[in-house]
Image (cartoon, rainbow, N blue to C red; front, side, top):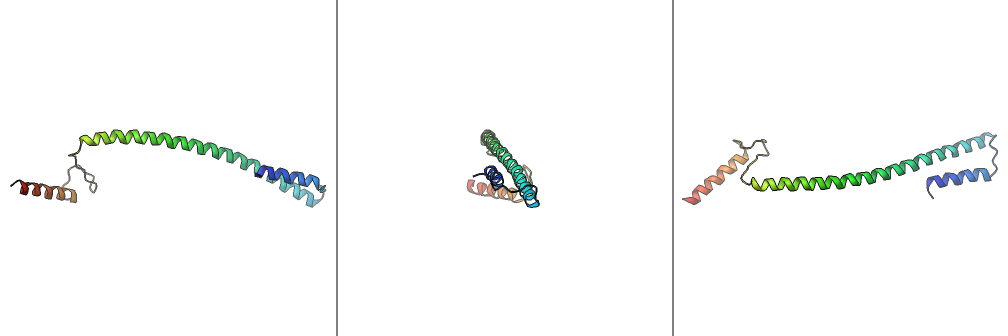
Length: 117
């Protein structure tokens, strides 16, 4: 049973028990059940809305995945042409002086020259 069905059951139970709604206890029970009924309808609407949003988010996620695949595929194709391109992640420069990347390149060039001799 969902929340809406349970509140309908409570309404039927209130009517079936012949509780006097003119007495304070009857008024209280009726008000509580009416409030529960309104809350149950709100929860039901929110549940439907949430399900709709979940479906929409799944569609957006799928579309974003397709866009990412297309973008990175194109980006990877461009990178294949730029194999000799060095970029320093530390200082965000293309050709930097004095950082580890520049020092590593200098060491590699020195080793290559030693091997050529």
